Image (tube, rainbow, N blue to C red; front, side):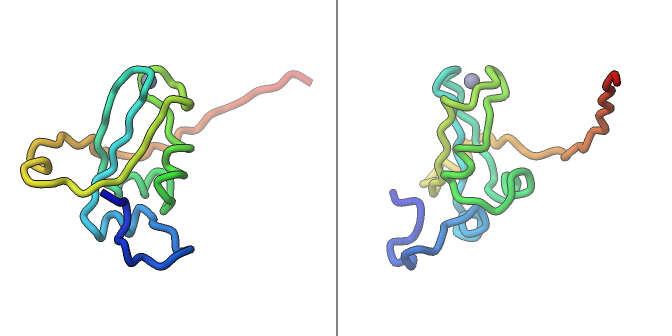
Length: 105
Ligand SMILES: [Zn+2]
């Protein structure tokens, strides 16, 4: 199934906001760990901005192996019972931690 509607105008990027409005779900997978996680596009947007799925793929890092190069991301429409069986990884909070860095002169 295409990520965006067939009649979507050329050159207009399909962003996480569009995905949210369309009721899509984001699936992010690490091919190295073989872990699949499901996210709500709106919550991903909170974290990485209103980007396209290609940009999501480029920005995410696996929580387990910390690698970026095996990540895959896609947006899809859950069908039938799928939505009831998906366990979403929900955003709890975004913490901005203060880090202190020292340097010897
Ligand atoms: Zn991994």
